[in-house]
Each structure stands twice: as C-alpha cells, then as structure tokens.
Image (cartoon, rainbow, N blue to C red; front, top):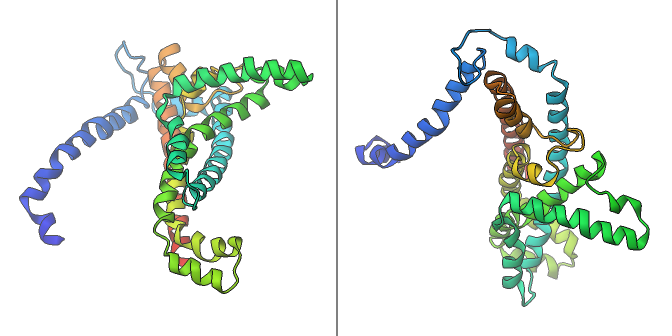
Length: 288
C-alpha cells in the first residue's frame, strides 16, 4: 500500500478528482469564509466588517427559528427514515417470493426529483386529505399544510417516504452478509425472531447504522427543494428551513456576505454533529 501511494501513477490517477474537489468545494468555501467578514452584496466592492455579520445573525430571530425547526425536523426524519428503512430491508431479505419486486417498488420514490415529490405530496395533503377530512368530518385533515404542526409532519412524511428506500439498500447490503449458520444455530437453540435479531443481526449490521445516520443527517439538514415545493416555508415562515433562509437572504434580499456568514455557521454545526455521530457509532461498533 505504501509503495502504491508513493508511485507517480497513483497520484496521476487521483489528480483529476483532487483538482475537481479543490475547485468545486475548497475554493468556494475559502471565498465564502472571506466574504462572510465583509459587507459584499454581490455587486459593489467589499469592505471588511469583521464579525459584524456573525453578531447580526445571533440576533436574527427568523434564522434562529429556522435553525431550531431544521434541528427538530432532522431528528424526526432521521428516526423514521432509519426505522422504516431497516423494516423494509428485513422484508426484502426475508423468504417471501416477491422480494425482488418489492426492492424496486420501495426504492422508486428516491428516483423522483425533490421538487416533483413536493408538488405530488402537496396535492395529496391538500386535495386528498381535504376530501377525506370533509367526508369524515375531521377538520385537521382539511387544512393539513395551513398550520405549523401539521406542516412539520407533512415534511417529515415526505422526507421519510423518499429516503427510506435508499437507506433500505444500505441495510440490505449488510443484512445479506449476516452468516445464516449463526441464525440457524440460534433458532435451533430456541431463540425467537426478536432474540435472533437483537443478539446476532443487530450487532453485525451496526456499521450500516453509522453510514445511514450520516447520510440521513446530512440530507435532512440541507433540505431545500422539498421544503420549497411543499410548504414554501409557510405559514408565516414557520416551516422555513436553514437552506431556504440562506437562499432568501442571498438572492431575495441581496445580502450575500450575511448569507455567507449564515452558511459558514450552518456548515460548522452540521459538520460537528455529523463527525460526533460517526465517532460515537464507530466506538459503539467496536464494543458490539
């Protein structure tokens, strides 16, 4: 491995990827960090303002509310996506005959674009839920996206429906590598299905939780397109997530430097949470 890393061919092979990563990720990040300390609006020349933008965002109630809403949404989405994804993985790795067809069906929502999904579920929540609510006399179903509480759960349902199939694929990859002789031996010893899952399957698929939690966490925090098409941040910015708040500050209010400060703070928060989660789960994998 050391000889490969020291060879010229190894680095020439990696050079295009490293160059693209530097140009697309590192350079914009450095420019964004610089502009966050200025009053740049995207047009006029810049003037250094120090930590002024960061002090301003700490007093921005709309941004802080969107950050809190995004955190709540991410926690709920991560929980339901992983629970549903694991459940679907257990179904399609069982002995049922239609498991191959079910894999395709469960994964299909992930192939649909976020904007399209948002409009589809907006129709379901407004028209379908409204019709059912009118027929059954349930008022809460007649205005599903008009209150902060039901709009929140509407976003969670949409996100869970889209990503559960994708996370299912990750769990399937690990479940299929669980040695069947261990399962059969436990079954012969009298262990029921729950005991077999708890003592054998769960510890062996622990690495899948690390990967799945990282993916669901990052996708939930940076959600924008579904938020835009389903609720648009309404009612009264109560469902506005951080990505939408940053976009509106940059392109709606033309506060480029201020939005960069928001983006830097958001990046640090997500990175800290994601790295902490990976560290804790990796440590737990060793213990299991």
